[in-house]
Image (cartoon, rainbow, N blue to C red; front, side):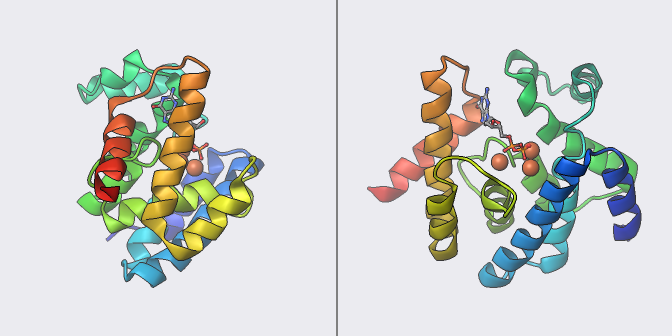
Length: 187
Ligand code: DGI
Ligand code: FE
Ligand code: FE
Ligand code: FE
């Protein structure tokens, strides 16, 4: 059995107060979305607590985890992406989390993927719209999330890709896969 109190304490000990507040917001929002979609609440809470646990590690420490797991495609892309797969591997190694649904939701929480599971959607959208998030358009994104999590996800992926392309940043293939799946579903 995973020890949620231990996870909460250890995860929070490695996060700044600001990021702790973000994670609390993601937990609360994930629980609400999970309820709505009929997703297991304990899985939603666990995934939310874990999702940014590597976020404030030095990039080299995150890269070491990815190399150790022979998952090095990430290293060709922006270091801001590395914390998601890193957290998924560390959740298993350090806390004994074995549930593939939880590990996958954490792994894909930044890029998304083509076939989003209900738990993936809950975490991705909660991460995007939790109460302490503040970016132009967050109110519209929140309103959409109250109606349709998949629509909110597709909106978020599209906004993210547009912004990255505008800045001439590389886009990770999983994010493009997610975008294409959203377009296909509208046809
Ligand atoms: O960790 P958080 O800040 O809570 O949120 P997150 O894990 O969703 O990270 C969001 C950042 O990742 C955001 O600034 C956009 C960026 N991002 C998402 N997909 C890509 C990406 N950045 C690059 N360079 N390429 C991507 O494909
Ligand atoms: Fe993140
Ligand atoms: Fe996100
Ligand atoms: Fe986050």
